[in-house]
Image 1 (spheres, helix red, strand yellow):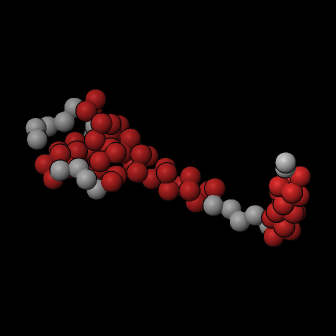
Image 2 (cartoon, one colour):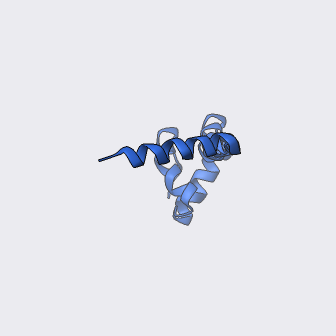
Length: 81
């Protein structure tokens, strides 16, 4: 694969994250990112942000609230026709 332009990088990110990007395209992306700060930030954010969001939203519901919610939902299901 030839040298990449900035506008070509975003199209490669899904395959890069999935590990399915062909070797030549991966090397071209890595070479471009090594010399382009803007694309380096884009790749970093694209690969890191989903993991950060998962960790930030991985919150255990307090047991008392879960129990109340389960009771509420159980009562709602019993009243359905």
